[in-house]
Length: 318
Image (cartoon, rainbow, N blue to C red):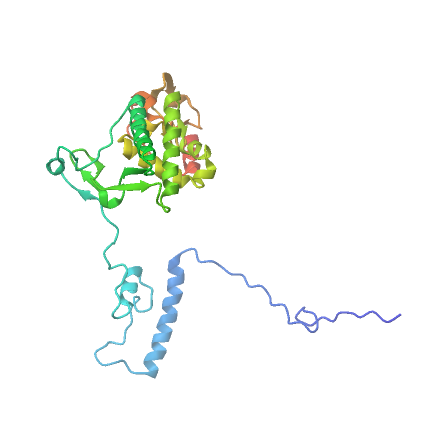
């Protein structure tokens, strides 16, 4: 039998023919940024001294360099602006291209309005019957266009930022008189038009049954058509502007988000809710705001906590 080969090791602890294994060094992380800056400033001073010994300072200068020259300034925006390329505009200095919300008085909007056309659109609270009548009026117009063999198109108020007007007297944003069309005969708009008619159909059925659904429920009723929830959510807002009502009047709400605990009580759909007796978990904030009545509280302030972990820690300690 041939003799067994033994692996030779080096003095450094590595195998023969392989590079030695380096020893691990303990790396300490700086607990304060000032420790890092202190070492950087020491290195800067050494380099500056070495540079002064090699080359004399330029005429008109004192030969000194500040923290800003070495990138130790705390205002990084100044540094970025000073390093701009000649002939090029700095993006931060360019005016925002996004349209800003206009501000206009109610009297001025009424002056622009005529007997046939209103200069602004303000959504109002409507009953289920009024909303259903609005949906039915839209359906009748669609049927008339289809029967005349013209296809159909929907007239929808624009929700773009350029068409939004803030009215100080109302303390709310209203829509201007800009409108857009959504034609079923247009290849680019046919799918959006089909989604709109489908949403109108689903909303009418929900209002007839006098029930509420979430936006997620609406999406799952026809996933193949909607594909993505953002499509159904956008059309939902379009329908609200078409009818002239709020989204809650369509009986579609967002999912429950948030908890409340503390000295507050109210009636929810006829049931008395006392949040002081809800324990640490608190009471889920209901999405049906129209069903909340007779809110009572003697709290001195309301504390809004973003993270649930922080909320739970405060609820336990209180």
